[in-house]
Image (cartoon, rainbow, N blue to C red; front, side, top):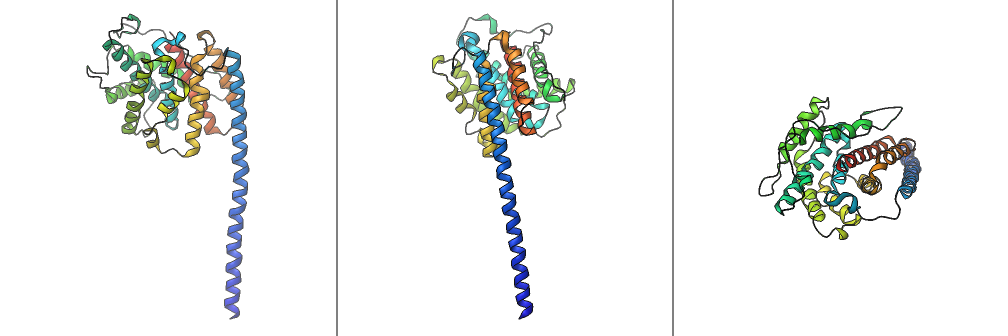
Length: 309
């Protein structure tokens, strides 16, 4: 009986110890998460303050006077690159697939509607046009800091082939464009060494490119941030199975970093993007979130530079 009692006591102590350890871990985890949330909130507040210096008013719509019917290509770019940030340098190339096919399909729709704007008609080019891009300075330089430059380099080379990837019926050949992008990326040392669920990627692109082009060609005054965000974060996005925390982070980055940069004056894009990058680099947020924010800013700013050419 004594042995049974001793065994019971030992068992009780062990269970109590395990439970206590778990409780301590939970207590430790909560302050850490709370601290990270506070630091991220501080960063967003700093970015909001910076934006207020560059925007004359609280803009909730794309500056259509600046962009015309080209206003959301940079946003497609930034969001797609952000969702594939875990692929490393390849994220910039995947962003190209988003904005490049968006532009291709937009050209098709404009042509179908007999628009006479010759500036956006696709023609083969005999040579490469100059690349307008920026590489943000950083003492600890990684692929993130030049991802926007290579994005613009790749999309420039793909466009120079004069091909269209949208057929006469409006069907987009996602795989052909993806393969052309990867081939050019490989030539520049960007290797496809990360798994990419191309089926889901193509489904997602189909779910955002055509609706966003329709938004651009509809009543532009009705296109605000809420509509655009709901288009990006649709039911197909849910197929990526990101957890709630990362989904919220994606939405915040899209709103705070990607969307609003479209309203910065062309002459101030590099200066503004550099300041945002510095705020991110000097923040106390975790490394993964920091990289995601830098990738989004880098691609969005460089894509904006290209679209406003």
